[in-house]
Length: 273
Length: 271
Image 1: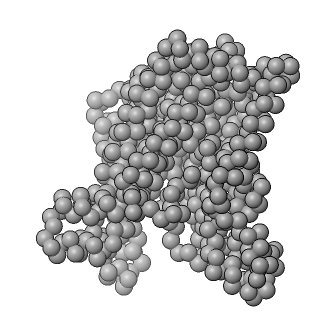
Image 2: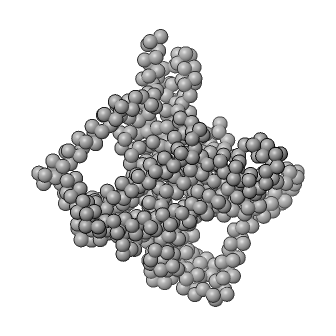
Image 3: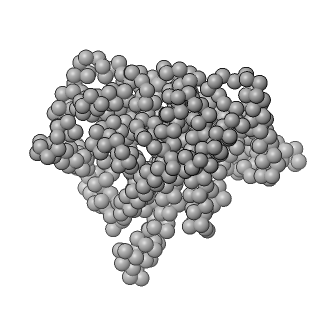
């Protein structure tokens, strides 16, 4: 019997073994790498394009305290959040409507299935020609790209509403607006949040990309400029900032999701993390 | 009222009717193309910004004839596919190891869980320094961006195998290897495919992005160069080629999925 359980443990380690001891070893290895990295940096063993962590942190702090970083973060996040806002709200609203109403769904279905797998970012140079090199064209690209995953997620969510819930609501005399607000949206929310999470990750990728291609301000600009001037420490500082922002935004979205979906989340459906 | 009213008579309709119905379903695409054509011909927008469809088609044909399309297309395809394919292999192996070997999961899981939301594209300038301007830096970036979704989905797939099935197999006396191949792999297959499906468009996006930023070959470069030299028709022709590649990738993956995971009829939505 005990042999069997041991065997099972070996075959299928539990997804959620006590997180405490997992964290211990999980941090140990990155820490060791970090220390090794730093030591190599101190002894001058690193190639020029790899900078020791202490130097990165020092540069990062310097950029932060001089207020330079805040300006770049502000202008990056401004574009990123507007692109996400427009793209995700269009995608979600149209997606829910398309899932609710047949004709709307049938109008968007072929367009979305045609354009969804296309890497929309390839149209970036043309968008620059249309809307100029400033903020607008970057926001447009993000809006277009984020529309599709959020649309598909919302459409799928609205489509898979339990029919019995719909009929019940209609039976007790709920109107269309009330039906959407109180039945369709709540039951589509898990899917909508999945779409938002993909859209969020995409918005960060596009934020960096569009700025690497053309920009005069923002974190991608810092990276591109630092690369030209061979200021690798500044480059890593900008990358570190992007990583922190991306990570925090994702965690924030997961917290919001948890708040809204309380009771709808199964233990294994908690997203990737 | 939620359900689309699919004409039930289609089942008995003739071959021609079925095809007509299929074409009719695509009407929004024709509407969009007509709107584009109308605007382009009306002269409201300069042809330097919005070329007519004939012009794009003509340019496309010229690229086919001159061999440019094949040349740049094959380079783009090669980069995307090498990065993507190696990410599939590595992702499934790492994901499986994360799910089944405790020590690896403790060491590597934080790297994948915490690194997931970070845009790896910001590392591209560093990759250029490490791997040079050529194919290698692009392939590595594609690999890295695709690795994360595939690894994480494989990990969850391998972990979420139904216990009852595992018990049943063990009860029937199957060995660990047999259990792995006959129970765990099939039950993880849908999740693995979901990861691959997330990674597929990413591979194309990253390839194109890297070609937009710094390259002298590849379809992304053609788009960037043509629009910088005010040849929008050529840029759009290249975009159409990129779109076609992306579309065909997606369709072939769907087809493959239905062949491999034949027991699950419908692809789940994203994620």
